[in-house]
Every structure is written in C-alpha cells, then in structure tokens.
Image (spheres, rainbow, N blue to C red):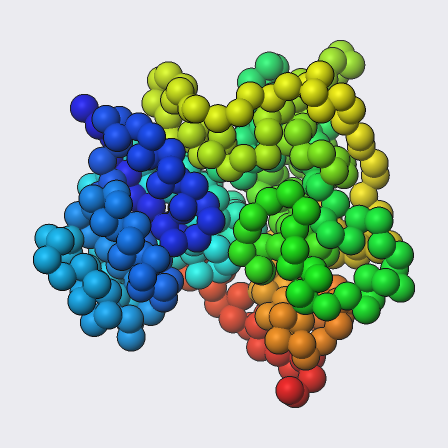
Length: 386
C-alpha cells in the first residue's frame, strides 16, 4: 500500500525536489495535501501534478485565486492559518516539513501525531523550540528524519557507533559566495551578490544565511537537539566541493562520514523511505573524477554570525530563539537595502545581549512564538528607517 504524504512548503525548492522524488515513485506514495505561502500558480501546479486531495495557502487573501486555479480538478482547497492546520491534520504517514523560517514552526509542531514520520527541513522548529519539540515527538512516538544534507549525513555516520563515543560531530559548509573575499570586500557586498549560492539552489533568505554562515550556526543548534550532542561536540568545517556533508570523529580515532553529490533529492529520498531505500536515477558520486576534496577552518572574524550562533548554543535557554528572530529581521532589512552586510551580525549581537525577557528555554511553541515576537520588536528598533 502506498504511503500517504503531506508536503508543507510544496512550492519552495525543497518541496519541488520532493515532488520529483514522489513522481519517480508513483506506486509508493499518495500525496494527501500540499501547503504553500502565497504563490497560487506554483501551488496549484504542484497540487495537480501530484494529484492531491487538498491544497492550502497560508495567505488568506489568496484563497479565491487558488480555488479558481483548481476549479474542475476535484481538489479541495483553503487559505489562512485554519486551512494550513487542516492540511496538517489530514491523515498521512509522512509529513515533509519544509516551510522556511519561524512561519513553519506552528504547522510543523502540529504535524506531530502518533506513529508519523516527520521529514524535517524546517530547522527553526528546533532552533526556536527544540527541547519542547523533541520532547513532544518522543512522547507521541514520532520519528524525526532530517532532510538537510548535513544532518542526514550525520544520521548515517552516527549509526556506526554509540552517542557516548562521539568526540566530535562536524557539519560542512561550502563557504558561501564570499569564502575567498576580504573583510573589506564583504562589508561592501550587496544583497544580490550575497544571494548567489555557489552550490545549492535555495531561497534568497537561506542563501544570505549561507553567505553570513548563520545557516551553519543554526544547523549546529538543530544538530544539538536532533542527536543529543553538547555544543563542545559539534563543529563546522568549510568544504567548497560540498561532497562530504557530515562526519563523526570517534573516541578510538576512527572517522565516519556521509558523502553524496550536492543534490537535495538524495537526503529527501532517504527521509521519505520506509524499510528499504528508494532507487533513484541520479548521477553517482565518482571520487576519481572529482580527484580532490579540500577543507578549511571557518573564519569567524569574517563571518561573525557563526560565532554568535555558537555562543547562543552555549548559552541555551531563550537565546537561540532570540538569535533566530533577530537574524530574520536583520536579513530582511539587508535584502531591502536598509543595512549593510555586517549590520546583520551587529543587530543580532545587540538583541541577544540586551534581551530582557525570560531566560528560560520555551516550554511550548506558544512560548517560543512569544519570545520570537519580543526579539523582533527589539531588532526592528535597530534597523534605520527606510
């Protein structure tokens, strides 16, 4: 019997790659529902290609247009928060959670239902409310499978031993578009330059997080919750070829690593699979053809956002939630041309340093969203008026 699947963030890059995996294995999946933001044509096309039963957009104003776009297909639709939660509540075996940013926190958490598998691509669920999210997942018997290539690689590498024997779990970074730029050049970089990723095709916000290396910092926080590893046992290594996605240094000196070509369909297929791996018609990794793999330390002087994220992980409590909220506000301001590149880290550092709310880690998603809202107000005060 086909596994039923719900795709949150179906019109984004992860959602589109998921559709390719599903369409290549039509006999193994039935897509129950798809959820998008406000892009009516993209979501309607995905809904029809995947022959879903229900489609929802988070933007309530887009409801009539979505209904019109799906007219005659037999696909039910809705828009707004209630429609998104309805999509989440519909019966499915697997939920691919790929709504980006804090906007994905509530629907991803609502997806936690007994016996489900969550293919997790929304890192904010763990950055903002990691302890509460993982506690609820354990209580409900939900299996969390990471979709990020780095965490998917660590999942494989960690299977080679016991958690207590891990000396260091390392995720890799391509280094972003400014890996070889001087600090002075980076300071003058435009949002357009920052949004061009050298390896992956992602959304603009994630591309800019990759340029600042904040994305790697958020992934460290995510790894802490996914794999129950302390900050001292987590690190980042720059690897421009993006072939080694994660590696584990063991207590006996051995190293286990997860390697693959940089194609998101690989970790998606792994996260969606049942007992057996999906057969994927993709290019195979040819190390002889590649010839050389290079690695270097991350430069936290040129990329201070990584240092801020590491500090937030060390501090714990509410600070990772605050860090993420301030970063989202600062990146939005940078994309709008209101601040320079290094003002992103300056705003994040200022908000994390002066946050006056409860220092406790959020016990619920509602707590996380309240902390998020307070931090956003603080960050917006630091953005110059446009």
